[in-house]
Image 1: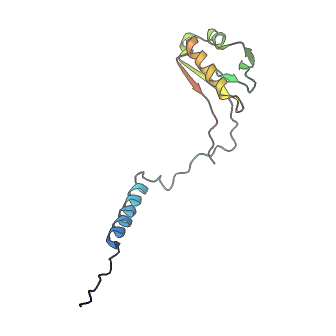
Image 2 (image 1 turned 60 degrees about the vertical axis):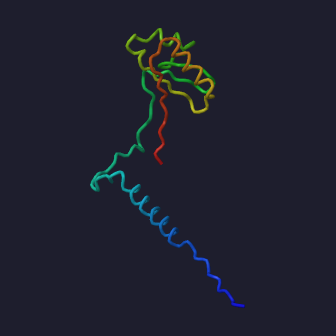
Length: 128
């Protein structure tokens, strides 16, 4: 009887090397898609700026009240009736952080139904 030699199974190292190489190429390309900013450019800092709402915005408080320039507004139709026709194309809404989302959606829908062209929600943008 002849003893057969068993071949040792080869590990698929070539396939692993190809995968790692393709991942390396992908991350090199993905990291250089956007050109970097100029080295001498200094960005504006806004740490000391006081954020205020636009003067023509409808302010929605956490309890559901609506105000415009400090006066209470009964509903969206009353707010739009006080605005000139050209200002109705873009209506800014400044909601309180604690305002329920359902209330915000309902006010936005009623503004659109009352004749507002675009309803823009003004938010605070965090840049930490």
